[in-house]
Length: 120
Length: 334
Image 1: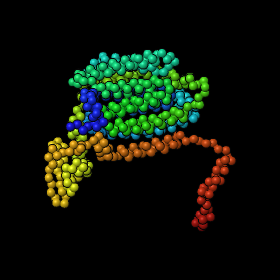
Image 2: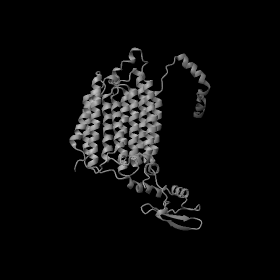
Image 3: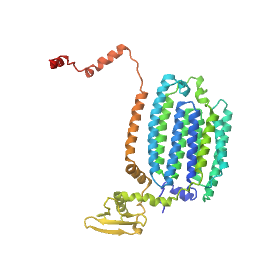
Image 4: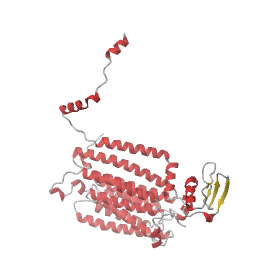
């Protein structure tokens, strides 16, 4: 008897073959592609808010990889790590957005180019 | 080790994806973006085909429909996040990508995380983003409603960035497609996840009582270290009556169907038992983020000197300085 996913059960009845499992590599491909899209977006976009959205996209990719590996080892560690990734992402979003609001007040623009002469 | 997916297909997908993103990233010429979208759709289709053949070669004849639906929605909307010129739409597409990843989480039997992802990410974090997008924009004038800001309209170095990104994707994926094993069947997961039940004797008590398998004065026998005496593999349970001091063994056919550890049990046990210190650290991180955000985003109000004086007078009684004890210290010296 399969007590695994109550949510999927009606679907399993309707399409028994459709919820079979893909291999680990399938999920890792999606996660890597998501991460890379976030990376490309972070490098190309010039709006600071979109840049931070792209970091969230990278967090997503990492989270998917963690969950997939956790499923592969049949343990809950991967999901626990995703909880902490979510926590760090929330903290990062709060700080980053506060920073964006602060920078916007100084220059009245969201462009990251406006701050290119920053030096330590 | 033999590669599961044909490397040529893999590199073709990566090259096409880079081309598609380079075309679709915002620039002055809108028509190229449409071409980029078409190329991206072709790329996703090709990737799906390649992955299907990978699934076939690993012994699965049937395509995994839901995986492909969620994966294509997730990747397509991720691409739209980084290519859409308007930030609000980017954020909305990001919500779509979150929901599709939540679907993938469900397929990976991480139901709790799927719902947590929708609530925390789509519900909380992204709404914060939307708020900031609304806050940090200039008042639009009639002329600027149609014209995009230069910052949003033109991407910086799209070709170089997508080339670098997809070279990285090619390297990552060609490493991971080399002979990684199939995900084990969920059947194996049942016993793996039920082993948590040994650590949760009171939950087992509750389930057994509810199922009516044991009497009111009975409970699961505990070992010396407080774990329940369950034999997960053979499906037998040792039940004890504390008052009489007797024990009996429940046979496998008496094992109730409801006696199973769900995703939440395993996750909660893992979180609280194996990573307790991390929770404390997470709490500190969140507190620091809250304080930091408050300090960073507060508004500095410039007051005239007179206003400052008026404020100080209003706060006066509570802000009086302690009286100087000059004479007392002198007396001490003497």
